[in-house]
Length: 112
Image (cartoon, rainbow, N blue to C red; front, side):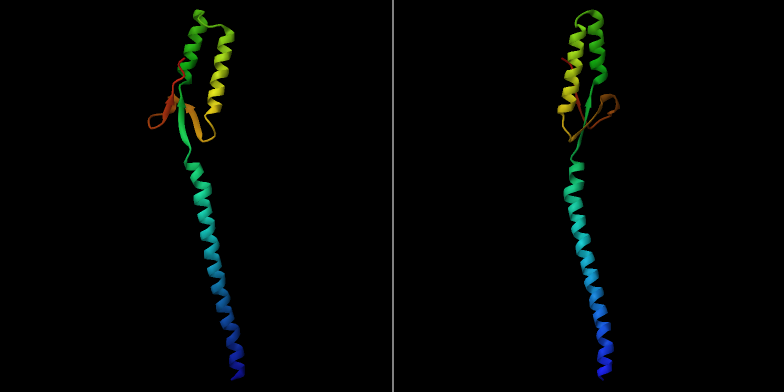
């Protein structure tokens, strides 16, 4: 009878060890999914798309430059303002040309 207890004991320990491994795996997987969903996935989803009418802005600058309404220095200053404005939009916004936006996104007009 003592031999049967010795043989059953390792088998019971194996079952317990498997149960501990499975439970630990479930806990670690659940925790990693929680962290991924709440801290990695959500910040990416909060990005917004913004369109900028660069084509209209450049046409206006070009016509002003050709007609003599603005000088080359003013043109360069306006281009620097455009670059500064795009950089000020921040990391949470994706900036694209307004020509590629069909609907559902904010379009920033650069008219001055």
